[in-house]
Amino acid sequence: MSDTSPGGTSPEGAPPGGAPDGGRAPDEGSAQEVPVSDGPVGTPPGAALRAGTSLDELERRAAARRDRPEYGHDALITCDRLVRVFTTDGVEVQALQGLDLLVREGELMALVGASGSGKSTLMNILAGLDEPTAGAARVAGRDLLAMGAAQRLAYRREVVGFVWQQTARNLMPFLTTAQNIALPMQLKGPGGRRARAHRAERTGMLLDLLEVSDCRDRTPQQMSGGQQQRVAIAVALANEPSVLLADEPTGELDSATGEQIFAAFRAANERLGTTIVIVTHDQKVATEVRRTVAIRDGRTSSEVLRRTEVDAATGQESQVAREYAMLDRAGRLQLPQEYTEALHMEHRVLLELAPDHIEVRPDDAGHA
Image 1 (cartoon, rainbow, N blue to C red):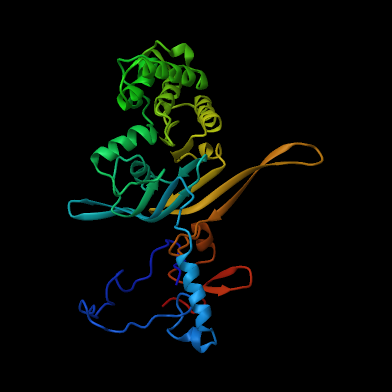
Image 2 (cartoon, rainbow, N blue to C red):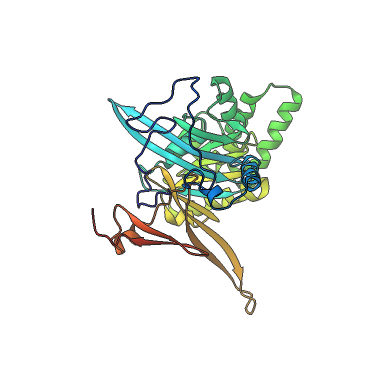
């Protein structure tokens, strides 16, 4: 049964893959028969046959499940029930608790959440800087749980680009702008006349795209914070990554400079086709993108999709935003706190299936 509690926690029961509490798993090689349901999840064994479902229909359903595409097969970034547990002084902290996320190629999106929600942990995993405890994570066809040290280094150089919040952390202080941009390309491959020509061409293109050509021969300390951050984006794009990740890229900038940084991200997304994921706690920043995913308690909780509509009579454009709750692969749903508090929902709720929706009501039996 789906967990629809405000916190989205899993119902208590038997440990995954093990015997129920108090029971014993069968010995290896034993022929113990295990009753299997022939209907939807939660249907008692044999119920579908007793209800008149034919064996052919059951075989058809089983075949349909086998032929179903793999979760995230058409996504550039796939996080499937991702878990990250940190242990400090014998105390375990679950930063990610079965998080699901799909990002399509070419998207410009934001991840938002309060401090401690798990968004930075997720970003570090996608950047190849940290490893998840369990679950699955794939970026541009790379399995992040299966990579060795050499593969992880190549992944960080070639597949993802990263922009940190601290502007000084993104650039080598003793190199000029052009040298900083060329450095990742030098580290990626061998030299030679053709390689040098490519580096020079790519560097010039990125300087023009991000409007920092006048900073070509300046070192970081000779530039403003906004200029440094735009150069940092150029450095992250140097090796033509599939994904650009940015952690609070406007956190140290004023609002006007922050708008310039987002203009730079949009230019990279629209003109280069780079998929961009931005982590932020600033809701104003999140409105700059078409898709915003909120993370709460280590899981994706809600998603806002924005689109532009044109009034047929006046021709005036307006942005329309709609918020959705996220339903994860386990069927869990996090209800907004203001909704549950308004209706005094605690511990459990009543569910009722209607023809075109599911009703969620407060428990009318009183508190147990």
